[in-house]
Image 1 (cartoon, rainbow, N blue to C red):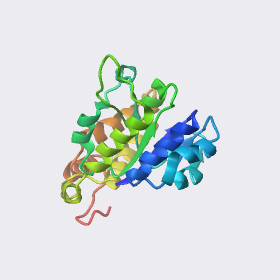
Image 2: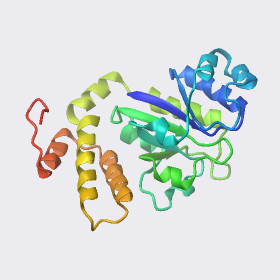
Image 3: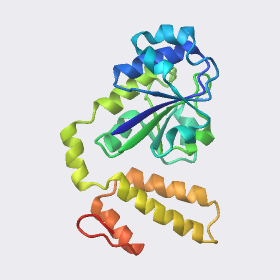
Length: 236
């Protein structure tokens, strides 16, 4: 799995440093930071990153979440799941997310960590392919941001065995097939003048497809329905 860690508008250098340190513990080799609200590579960020200072020094700075996550399935995070759950069907407690997507199903994942002050907005979460939260105590559900990151990375990057991922890939559709289907559906939506809120419809379809984990044969059936046939080698 290709993995990208995206940090949105961090306000405090110490948090950048701590998150860099955690990221390096789990093999993350680059930070993608969206609109930092402090000097992201300042003295305290370097100090608290310890031996992960290279991640801070070489961080990729982006202007938007879209820029930082382009080409990746976007997994947002929240401490207050009720904020995300209203009107959304793709919100998962972390253990449920791992059961559904932890065996190599997502080929390119961007994990988006919200602001260290207010988290992600409801609008930002609605643009994610999935949103995860850690099932902490109801009386005090908000974890320190670096502690939460450690739990998330351990769960996401530590529970995928190579054998399971390979076996999974022999049965379930890969990202190329899924993207082909999504592209066809997108063109159908754009060409249909009777469909309002086209972006919302396309996003809902993506959520349904990725959440269901379609097999290769299921994708092939849908592609045929759209008028595209593939031979046994996967070529059109």
